[in-house]
Length: 376
Image 1: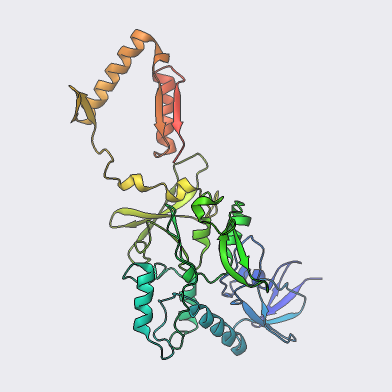
Image 2 (image 1 turned 120 degrees about the vertical axis):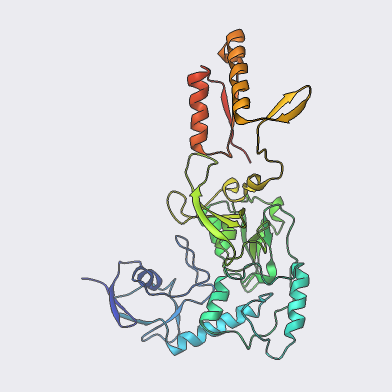
């Protein structure tokens, strides 16, 4: 017998074990979520994905509730919308979410903004402005004017490591970062800190230590999974704004896997790298692929060949430099044999460039002495 579920009046088929969210997503029906992360264990923590099921006393979370035959579901009923608005309102009131709100229920909005700017040590609004799922949902459900000012920050911002800023004042404790770390990358560097009633208090590394002192490998999967401004790339903070950066898709050159990446470009400079949700990496990256791009715009990067004469370097044309290298390599090879030469190539150039160097080393120089700096 064919399994049928009715969602918003549409009869849809489903397979055993599929959740309401699975069926809806597969059929183009949008059920908003904040905690759900594809291919990980659903928890229903955020309760934004609640839906109304005919015959059920309470709303159910679509990401955890399995579809059953003849189940009738409404995804945007008045009861559902009211619940989502209240959930979003509570999240906005839980910390330094100084973005979508236009007032603070009679409290001092200016004072709140000034306090947040002091915590951020910046005059700009939230670093996730324009790329925040909570902000998107606040606009969608018009939760703006009656939000209380944020609570006092319970934990200081962590800026001690070179790659990631952990801003606990903006954390909504949705758990997406924990799922990304433990189930996607399987690094198991972060987890929940809970109180005696099993309420989530904080996302911690190890026994609540800084990331730099934990098992974190700085792959940045948690940053990419974070739906708000609680985890951001340190160098891209307040730099990567959706409206003034352009995303350019390319292939990561650090190894032969071929991970697909987006370069976030602002004024001709790469300010951030993110993973593309496509094979082979499906959005995941390693520390090199996500954070190893500073060399592109480095002031120390050579832009013209240099030739050393009398103990000092002088600029030269490519033709002069290549001609000199060819003559010197030929002379060394003739005098001492091909194995007197070694070639060291770079992980920061393309695989095609490295292949060309490999062919040159073995084919032209006739030596196998070639190595690769596959390190960050």
